[in-house]
Length: 119
Image (spheres, rainbow, N blue to C red):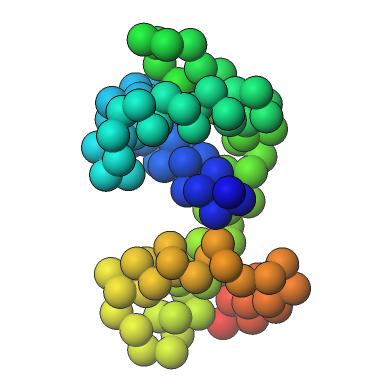
């Protein structure tokens, strides 16, 4: 559940940065899932305090959601940077960072971030 939550938060943040707004339909397309699945998850994220969501309206991150999104973005950049340091091309490093960032322990992520700051 945490991995899915994080993916949704990241994509909401990404769409907000790109378009200035987020609609559930845009989120469904980006995540390649059906709109009812997005609605269900947005309702859960709203109850957990991560998003502001009302049916047929734009979606926005709460301060709690924004804090998590920025943490996830920082984590992603650090992992991507380390992969590129090892010689992985940028596109592959970006895709691979998306995969592993949700499954690594906090301890490992902290070590990667510290290493990324040094390189």
